[in-house]
Image 1 (cartoon, rainbow, N blue to C red):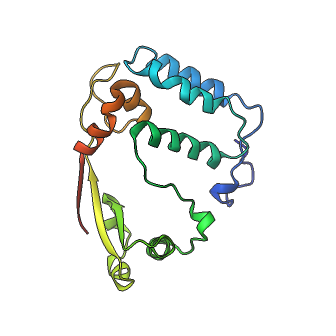
Image 2: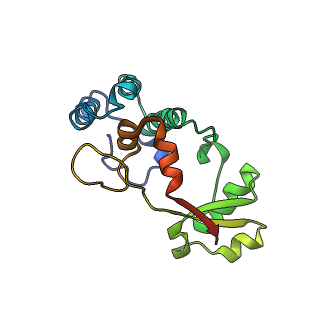
Length: 176
């Protein structure tokens, strides 16, 4: 990745260094760690195809990986880029602007939102807040005892089409 002197750049400006060996290293790591996983052969080629494309910016590659995961998990929620919507603000005001520009009346926060979100401000904008608490459900992994919160690739390669169900079992949503 090209990053020298660019620590203030926006994420959408993050470039990928042409010719850097990261693609080969990532694919080798995935192969070494998951080649014997039950669903590796079913999914790996689709991720490999993304790695073989030419990417100039990190967000483009990241979104392509996320879209593929959504497809494999049968998630049909649209993916929108805040930069394309002109989202502005910081912290709680940023959340309010996201909701305003997407027409949402409810925002689903991660469990740690209680540490930094001003829920009264969101309420003053007419927004409801829900908190998601996720506790990884154990599933069979290739190496040793279960390790929680690894990559979605770990779950896909090990659990296949059951991945969505397993994730949902660990999910709880409550009012903020």
